[in-house]
Image (tube, rainbow, N blue to C red):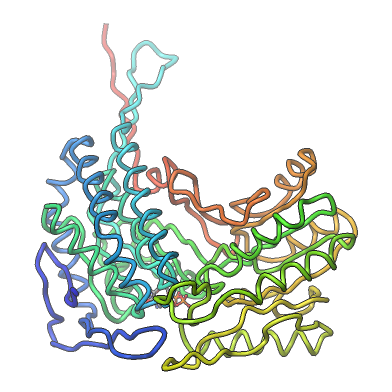
Length: 479
Ligand code: ADP
């Protein structure tokens, strides 16, 4: 297992020699120690990315595309290794972790396609005496700060487009899950990616982030994480006018209309809600269900949720792993307590589950009936296996409830009426809409949010655009 920084193609400790522990999310047992880096290592990483920039950015796009394809192949070949590391450090079930490897590899395949399509564009001018061209140039050195819930996929969706365009990169993974990123760095090394093109350092988020944003050579930062940290980064980015992509918190509504296929909606709800134990930014966070089908939805949903096996991610059949830390347990407990005090009813779950030999971090999949908009769980992101279900009467009421939030990442709607689906999709104020499905992620599509959920898109050609600085060349034509 790799446990050092990857800078300029070499494995290095922090200058101070200091390290911090990375622990198994289920048991708390130490898995490894990794460098406690700060500003010094952050600048080392920039220096390496700076030295590599000329060579990488002038390589032909098709050559860069072949590296991307090799990386995708390598990810698939090492699927078991990556999945085992992710399950250990973030706790998710092994089959979800394996799915994440495929999903991450798709970002590289998608970016390889896009690299091959990168072209200058000639613009028809209304004036005969000028020739206009738009040239896609890499924005420069880019930073990536990634979260713990998808340690590989969130890195892949930042690294793949950056490399496709010709940028070089400095990466800081989440402190809780750096081992996946270091294993990924090992893969980059093994496929022969030139030294310095991607540099991965672990350590103190605030000093590393500050060092990158104040340096002037880092021209873009792509961040996935909390809205609170996104705001901080946005302020710091102002100093050097660094371009940002921010994928922040979500608070997704899941609307079930009375003409929906309720059983299919329940399956989608369970799959969407309980992935990574409810710790994804696109998880349905608020269920808004038509009164005619309310009882049916609640009882079927609770019955399915109750059957989900809670346990260590590595054990066969487990659907709900541990929550990431004690704060997550406190937050879900508080939300349940608040909801019950406002009249909600716990239909299933509501408490932690003891798992032999593990930390007290496992929470039963929980379904709350009689939820309403004044409850905390309807106002704040839960990031845990809690499904509060409220009732609505009219379509406009459902839309109003769904849009009653400053967040705008994902939304889900279930109906058999195509006109209603079109109408409601247009009115939802969010970046992604799932129509009769609870799982929407796709490496070829534009993923991203609005409002407090951030801005910028990841995936497909939209993800590529984030790393391009278009140069417009206006040339005089004589004669
Ligand atoms: P979460 O609450 O989901 O852990 P965070 O926003 O705290 O989300 O973390 C997401 C990523 O942001 C992690 O890599 C974390 O280390 C990093 N991070 C946290 N605080 C800062 C900061 N002040 N500056 C830069 N990065 C930060």
